[in-house]
Image (cartoon, rainbow, N blue to C red; front, side, top):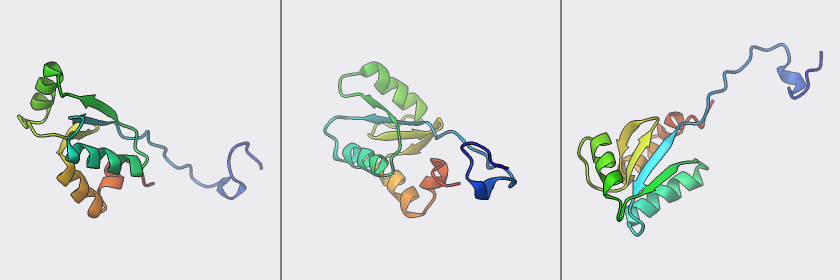
Amino acid sequence: MEIPGVPPELVGQDTLEVKPPAKVEIYTYRFSSDCIRAKGLLDRLSVTYNEFIIDDDEINKEVMMKRSGGRTSVPQIFIDGIAIGGYAELQKLNAGGELAGLLRLVA
């Protein structure tokens, strides 16, 4: 039986669970090299993220500090609301193969 939008080889097989992409938020300074690197890595992975540029934004600086347990360094990256740290931590997760799973880039 043909089902519109479903490849013929998948008809009759168990359906795959489709999960929405992870929600990624990043607090940055405009000219921070680590912020630029972190965004570059996320961009290369085709990850959509919400960026909060906090150069002159005291309110979002405070929000970032509360969410990150008092950290003041940037970037501060959150995946599905969980603080993962900065660029070094993001890179370590990527190098270890864990980042794709957190971002739900793999089935």
